[in-house]
Amino acid sequence: MLPINKLIFHQQFIHSETDFEAELANGGDRLIVTLFTGDWCAACKMIQPNFNDLAAKHTDVLFLEVNVDDVELDFGPKYGVRGLPSILFFKHHEQASFK
Image (cartoon, rainbow, N blue to C red; front, side, top):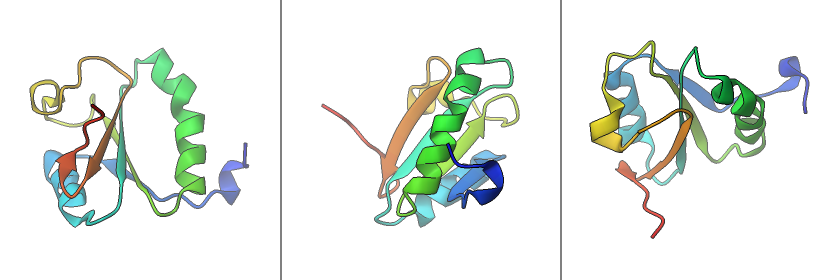
């Protein structure tokens, strides 16, 4: 793992539904990987270093982090988030489907 001060993050922290929608709208052809996390979520804390490493290594991908405790938006019905951590993929402002 790279030292934290050596990482160049292509990662945004989302603080509102407006921020989230703006990032999706401006994503263009880029893949957007979104981690839904919570302060109380132990599993979220376990995968966080890996998420950070991926953000540092894949500069062509935009990584978003949404702390559901800080954002006033119910992501469950809109995006299918049923538990934490959840990782969703978006491209062209639409959620990716892996069927």
